[in-house]
Image (tube, rainbow, N blue to C red):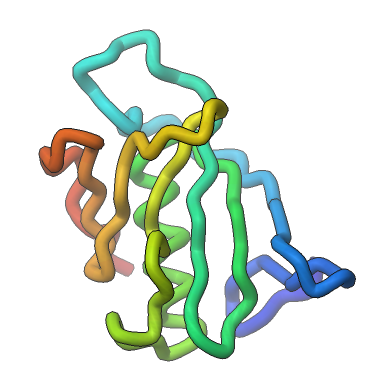
Length: 119
């Protein structure tokens, strides 16, 4: 995939959604209260004038990092992000976490599970 300002991603040739796999380092699960919750999840990223991406993530640390990289790579403000940007979905399409504009990860109950990644 071509690199765009340090973010590995590209829109699908058809103009549709891209999906890319990310091998995440060991880290926080999306919800630390569920020890067996290790399935791959999809992070949804979408903003005005930017590619819309669905990225496979395994933990909140990698999801936080990727949203922050997307935001910074495209110089986005919070108002540029489309609805549901930062949502993390499990394989059934249920929202299991949300990564806020500042990179913090919240579980489906609104509890903080990961602080923002600092570069």
